[in-house]
Image (cartoon, rainbow, N blue to C red; front, side, top):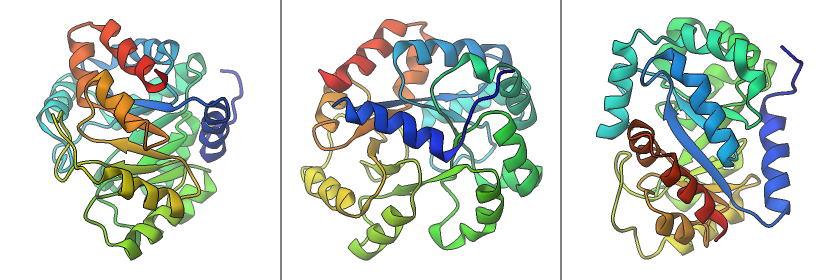
Length: 263
């Protein structure tokens, strides 16, 4: 496998290149191993070729508290196919060099603890994972993984909610690495028809405090949503709709979502 520089700096470099060209960022989410572990690399390759700025891969877990029905079901399918965290990392380590886009793993804390924090970070780096999203790891407890994360150079991406106080927004934004994941709805993941009217003000505040790009996520499911969100954010994360489109083998719809970020 060719040597590649991965981790926090890789996300920063790739995202800055895109933004400096005047383009927006698009991060699709997939559930690793939905359809079997053999689908992971081909799916990543197709999303990479379609123009994904980075790709977020979910790690199947038995108690995914932040996930809506579509992502929960995808995780169940992956687990029923025998997909494990070890299998995901092993597969990536072999084939990561075929994908240019940064890869961000979305996992809950329990699988990392079960794996062993330091060993997980070491193996994640070896697998070419660049960043982590851990929804159930509060900012106040990130020191639990900080040393290992820093040793292996991974970005820890923070989520910020609509209901966070201005003071908490400031702390979360300043701590986030790679990008700041701005949740656009109150509740779990899944498609929505409408969003709050004051999102523009919210994103203005986030950008004031954030030293990394601010991406909107949760509920974004149509090209119009993507166009609307990229008026106020540096880019978007799209999950449930990506999973549905992959299931339907409708990569044309995925391409229309990606293309909408700069239309």
